[in-house]
Length: 254
Image (cartoon, rainbow, N blue to C red):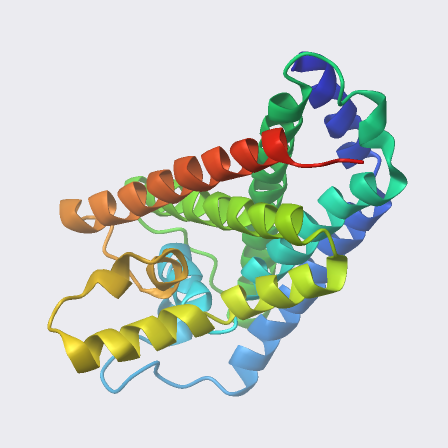
């Protein structure tokens, strides 16, 4: 496991495409903040102006917008990172080792967690620079609330990366996998499920879908919202990690 993780980590850190993704994301994030400045208006009647938002409020507003750019970047990188090894056939060098199939999946899950963490770090950097330049405002807000928000959203986005990893492992083609990742980022499935649910019942089970939870603004001072976010994240993390491992163990790699 350690050797496979070191191998994937080296491939990850020396991957120029990963740094290009991060730089492009920073540029688009700052451009988005610039455009918000140009067309600034209250989010809703009586709601707070963007210029008066702290970072916690700003992050939740940005993540609630569809499509979620951070989800799209995570989806594209998840597909690219897996397919770059699969297409090269390098996995054949280690796949016969004991537990190599399981460990190779767990290693990639950890790498996707690191990439998701990098995405959040550059998002914060871009937000603070952009808000300082265009809104002359870079307040973080309550530190406890801010930390809970970041942890919850990080876990949700990491779970999303694992869902995309499962998809690309099963499809084994880059373009269809990216299309599926983009559809998930657009929350097409969540919106359709929510609409159908509203027609047939009074339940709100669709609110517990992964992307629905990501785009829905939560109050992290409320224990119910914290439990909702953490439970959805952990369930999707574990369920799709297990699916990925079980699929890889049975996969025909000839």
